Length: 315
Length: 268
Ligand SMILES: Cc1cc2nc3c(=O)[nH]c(=O)nc-3n(C[C@H](O)[C@H](O)[C@H](O)COP(=O)(O)OP(=O)(O)OC[C@H]3O[C@@H](n4cnc5c(N)ncnc54)[C@H](O)[C@@H]3O)c2cc1C
Ligand SMILES: Cc1cc2nc3c(=O)[nH]c(=O)nc-3n(C[C@H](O)[C@H](O)[C@H](O)COP(=O)(O)O)c2cc1C
Ligand code: FES
Image 1 (cartoon, each protein chain N blue to C red):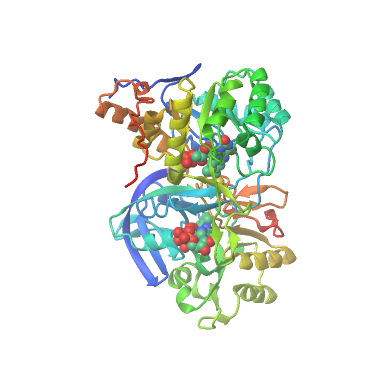
Image 2: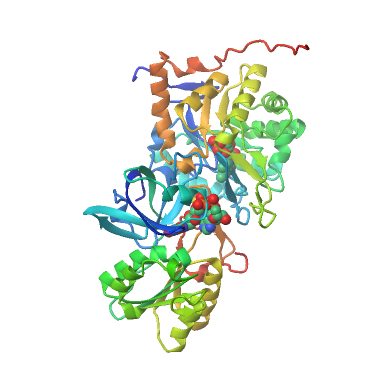
């Protein structure tokens, strides 16, 4: 088992294994240090940072769904300054590989955060969240429109001094067109998917269960949408490095994303149910590879065998 | 320090169709637990319900000589119903102890405090009563419920605090005062009893009324709040309540025990 090579390469970003944690589901990483040795994870993507601290949306912010949950947190965060001075040194001491997830209301906001991060060596990559469905401004506007997205990515790429990940929204008609817009304008890596917009209703009150009305659906309920989107992007853009995200709970789920074409994954909502799950998945993936005679996890990537789709026939 | 461990069910004790006590092995969580803290329990196989559920650590005790944690649960939906049906010996994933406990370290002999419970809000007050009685601090319980059968664990409270220090109110008059627990408490204040601090757990309307009474009487309070929770340890930011200083505080990490003055009641 120890002979399995778990390392993966995403452009210039080299990870010791393909298990990362997803933004907004892993706090600033430090909250998990009681449950997980952060240094065993491929990477951690921390809660979306904005230039100034943000209070987020009024409650209720979450509700459970079948096989998942809806959330409309509204990007509450401590701001990039406090993150860099108060959290990053400790994350570095604990040996974490840190991805800084960033967002803004405008192009200028995004650029200001990226500029502030600068060439900070303790940040392995920057992940642009252009796909948050839970804020009135910004966020999804960029994620839905390939032209606006392309312009934003180009501006950020000019100033970013770390590898640039663009996190795509699934709330689009064609994921390939936003993926292409991001890559054509300088994204080094794509991550997909963010949450799917959903609505849950309290029938007694006939009110939305979430204060923001709609929320982002996450968890196992969305996994097969995510796997399909990873596969579509992999087919259209064979070279681009991809983080697959959505509903991962077990080692087999990770393998499924890799087979569909992801080079690595990010584990999200599962961290809430079981705070040790990310480290357990690192072991689980190694065990799966060993049991299946795979000596290198990267050999699994994009190995899906599809059959030609038949045209329909009439009686 | 919070622990993520699997604890076996020792026993389920039913009070009525909607209330039960669940006794789990104490594990390493039990000995660390402070009054007011809670744990996140996975009910069932993890698919329905999907998320863990929050329950106050009601007591740290023993069952047939085995160290145990007791949870007192009211059945309100799929998770609590599933937990009520788990067989003895079933392993339950538990994360705890979590959250800020009731502040009791500053109390000393001579202090007198009040415990105010509404409905299932009795749960965190049992362990609190135990710790207070061990410290020799005089405490009075004011406990309101719908009816006599929903006013639980009276024998435990009366043993720990003394029967004369336990007063009840019920909506239907079947036990104690016919009316609200806050009226019962106000009666004690009007009778001249002075409390150093009031510890409370119950529904929001009770909290709201009690917060007003305490502010008026200038009495310190610590309320154990509830909120829908996904993680229980401060990372999802889903469980927040509006604070008096214009922020949102996580009930799971900055609470659940908070002074009522910390909350912006107009936005709650
Ligand atoms: C810190 C904390 C300590 C708690 N301690 C206890 C305890 O000791 N004993 C106990 O019985 N319960 C306690 N609760 C409440 C308990 O967590 C909920 O009753 C439980 O999550 C409901 O799960 P369910 O699947 O049965 O209900 P669901 O199917 O999820 O919901 C059913 C109904 O219950 C309501 N509900 C859901 N979650 C909560 C909640 N957190 N608070 C109030 N109403 C809710 C829903 O709005 C819905 O109307 C505590 C909650 C918190 C946050
Ligand atoms: C409570 C919550 C908060 C989130 N916050 C962010 C965020 O700040 N930035 C971001 O890019 N994605 C955020 N996400 C999306 C997740 O990173 C992930 O893309 C999504 O939840 C799907 O993965 P999952 O099904 O494994 O959770 C959040 C998700 C949840 C559930
Ligand atoms: S329940 Fe997740 S932050 Fe409180």
